[in-house]
Image 1: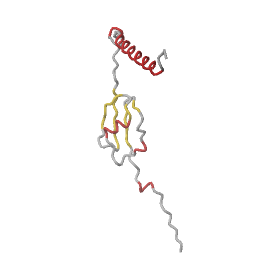
Image 2: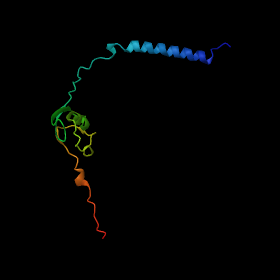
Image 3: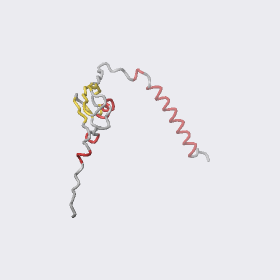
Length: 121
């Protein structure tokens, strides 16, 4: 056989590709190919105030970044056992300053229906 077999060609292509990638990385990784942006502006992260009251252990005003989830704010305020978690949408993102009153669970006794008593005599 005069020519190279498939495996030998495969090795040749792999080594050639590796050498080419090294050459390209060395050529384009210098800073002169990526000039700085003279007109770029700094991005300022906006903060908001969230006042938390109700069934929490640490009520008060919290300063958080805009876009923070309600769950993250309530972790800081620490929900009490009597807090009604079902009434809160914890994934909600906050983008404006706001007040939040965490509701309490309703009394279980008042939520039950009264049993009807029948006199069978």
